[in-house]
Length: 212
Image: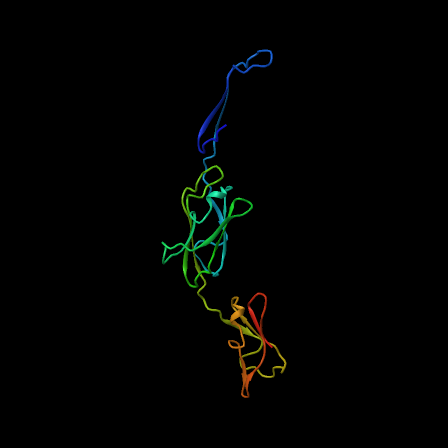
């Protein structure tokens, strides 16, 4: 049997010419009316909301659809990412369908640029498993983080007195920081007698730097 066409009505007919082994035909023609699926897939949710700001430079974005997708319909031609300032230049990305066949995972191959607006487009070329494409392109706007980190607290006051001589000094930031940028060149301790040697470590959540 050839594959049927999506969004079409069909009639299956079994005629009175069908008989049992004794030659008795069915009393009347039997008909079954049915239609193939013509409902396009829709986006149910995404891991980031439209127009979200402060997105990281290496985000993994997932988009969940209402139906299972045709794996062959998802690729760089149907999932596209571009800076809003340069919409004609596509940014290389990886677009894969997860094991549930309903979720597309998108990740830019190079890191994105800070403080930049982007548009992720999923075209109508993405289809469900029987060929129904999206009714309209799905558009997701977002912008990368352009807010500098700030110190929100330390273990002592700025001009605190009576600190223990072997104390560890902890600085807490308002957002995760890049550990590679926290070195003894960017995080220093000094006194009237000159610089104080020590080691800077960063906590696993990247919110605190500790000088010992």
